Length: 328
Image: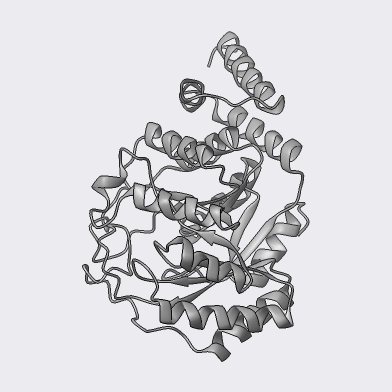
C-alpha cells in the first residue's frame, strides 16, 4: 500500500474514532466506509481503543444451562434444536431442579457473574415457566449471582413473572438484519422478536440480543443488525460465529475469513461503544483468533459449554480473560 494511502485511511478511521469517543453515533454510510478500509489492523486497534476508553477493562461473564433441548417447532435454518431438521440433537424436557441449581452454584463458585436458563421452542409453557421461577428463587437464596433467561417469544405477563422471581435479564437474538432474516426463518418474524424485547424492557428487565454471522449475509446486513440493536438500546450483544450443523440447511455454509470476523466485531464496537460485545456460539472455530477478537473490541463471553456445540471450559476461559489484562 502506498504510504500516502495508508495515512488517508488512518486519518479517516481516527476521525470516526474521535466522533464515537465524543459521544456521537456513526451512521450507516460511515460504518460502510469503515468496513471497506484496506488497513484492517488500524480499524481493529481503533475499535479496541474505543472499548478501553468507553468500557474500561472489565470483562463480563455468563454461563448457560441448556434447560430444555430439541423438539422446537420453528424452522430456523442454522439451528440444531429444530424438529424440522434431522440433526441428532439430544431431546429432553425441562431439567430437574437439583441439576440446574447445582450448576448455577458451581458457576458462581468459579466467579462467573451471570447464569442463564436457555430453553428450546418458540415459547416456554406457563407450567415450565413456573418451574424456572422456582429454580430462580432457590438460586437467589444461595448466591447473589445475576440470573438471565432465553425462553423464546414470551409475552409481558410471562416476563413479569420471571422478573419477580429474580431473573433480571432476558435474551432474544435478532440473529440477522431485517432484510436477511425472512430468508432464514418463516415460522416467526423479526417483528415477533422485537415485540418480546420491548415487552421485557417494559417490565424492567435488561435485554441481551445479538446475532449470528456467517450465514450468507452481506456486510450491509451485519451493519444493519448492529444499527437495529442500537435503536433498541441493547447493551449486551452476543456475537455468534455460525457453526454449521449437519442436517440443517446451512450445513455447507462457507466459513468466514478471519478478517471478515474481526471486521464485524470492530464495526459492532464502533456502532456500540458502550455495550458488552460477547463471545458466544462458534468459539471453537475461532480459537486462533480469540486474542485478536478481544483486541478488536470484545469484552464479554459466554463461558463453559455452549448449547449444542462444544464451547470452552469455565476455568480455562477465566484464565484467558485475566491473561488478556481484564478484571472480572
